[in-house]
Image (cartoon, helix red, strand yellow):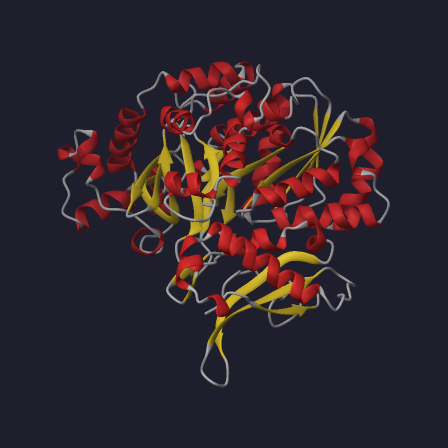
Amino acid sequence: MSYLPTTSSAAAFQHFLSSPLDSLLAEHQAVNAEQKILALFRRCATEVPAYRQFLQAKQINARQIITYSDFQNLPLINKANYMQAYPLPERCFGGSLSGADRVAVSSGSTGVPTFWPRSAEYELDVAVRFEQVFKDSFQADKRTTLAVVCFALGNWVGGMFTTSCCWHLARKGYPLMVATPGNNKSEIFRVVRELAPHFEQTVLLGYPPFLKDVIDAGAAEGIDWPQFKPKLVFAGEVFSEEWRSSLAQRIGSETVCEDSASLYGTADGGVLGNETPFSIAVRRWLAQRPEAARILFGESRLPTLVQYDPCSRFFEIHEGTLVVSGENSVPLLRYHIADKGGVLSYAQIWDFLRQHGVQSLEDLGLAGGSQTRELPFVYVFGRADFTVSYYGANIYPENVTVGLEQPEIMAWVTGKFVLQTQESLAGDKYLHIAVELLPGRVPEPALVATIAASIRTELLRLNSEFANYTPVEKQLPQISLHDFADAEYFPAGVKHRYTRR
């Protein structure tokens, strides 16, 4: 563990519980992350049977991996060549599951679901990410807080992981009560009505589209969200700043950068990074300047932008995709998570901002006394293959999302859609977007035209390939509207995909 030079779980917990957040982060910043990851490699080469066999199969002598440059030349591991190639116990320290006390299951969006044993001790690094959000953004160390876990509960990672980390914070002394209705709206509303009046603020934690549904459906049932001073914690999907602004308006937020935060997490690695008020302010500034965003990220779409602790989760880049290393019950060493993205140092972010006229936090819309953490940034576009090609232009779901997230449209639709290219009977290609309506909504006749025009406007603004490659007469997408949970495009209980080939 990174908290103490000891393997004692009890000592690690005591150190976490007794150490303020500032102290924990300062300890980590004093550690050379490259040397720490080398030490993890040496331990795995000795204590993890599967990794030892993996190196032998690649004819690699672990004793010859001495420097960080040597480490960078090690082969990547992934689900196919490692996680599914070796028995689960052999991928754990000591070749045994005895060091783990809980298990998470990946969603299986890339194939067969994968089991990830964990221990409560290894959750402490992840709990620090939650502590950053609850303390730095929500001031939950000073305000009585009701945390309502709206992720699905069970073996799937989001709900139980979130609950456990929030319990750690409560045990640490945060005035925090954790409620676990899961993704059951009626139970969420019952919790909010009964408990929220007794707390200074209420935090809803869940997937972005579901939290929007909760807020909209709750308002329709008479819940006055602003009176409960809601805060929002998201995970699982990239969303636009227009979408964040829309939700902030619904909950009565006046400090958008402090009232929500997105987590970048995976079942295999836990929470890898978290939004901060600073990262949100930078992203919102970039959302208004697509050309600057394109220079910084190399693409016309806006990624999730979070800060991370390299002492906890160590990132590398491989051909434009992310590779992560970190200590877990199943340790990860150069694990290819295949999300498209990159890393930027704290100094690189500020250098870029200053080159574009930003000299202070106030220029980004933050209060002058706002605290920033000098942690590096990782940006994440999501899976590298979730695009549609149209007249040679790569169309990203994120571009379409912004078009739907206009106030006059969001009153009618859930935000879910399916993007695809189709051909007419004459063989002409066109862009088709199936859009899901809110429950019970019967659309006005003009809604289709409004949606098509809005999406075209945002594609032209955000996607230079679309603007330059697509003939003008082919730029207006064809829209079809579908009932909520439509079986063909939006089946209930299935992980939604925004593109279809």
